[in-house]
Length: 103
Image (spheres, rainbow, N blue to C red):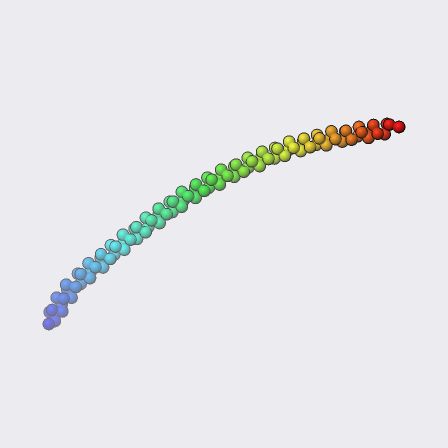
């Protein structure tokens, strides 16, 4: 009877070892797969981030150029308004002179 127990035990130990080994192999492959997926995700995120940075740089440059053009246009408008104001002041002064010179 005791011999049968030992025989059963000796046949079950290798099977249990084989099962444990198979599970470790499955877990190892699963871990490798997860690591590969995480690496791919990180690569895609880095690629997306680079594209976003490039877009933001282009957007910033376009905004800066637009602001420079607006500043130039405002300067031109200011000069036009100053010239207009000067002409109007001269015209108003000339009218005052005419009005004063008339009896």
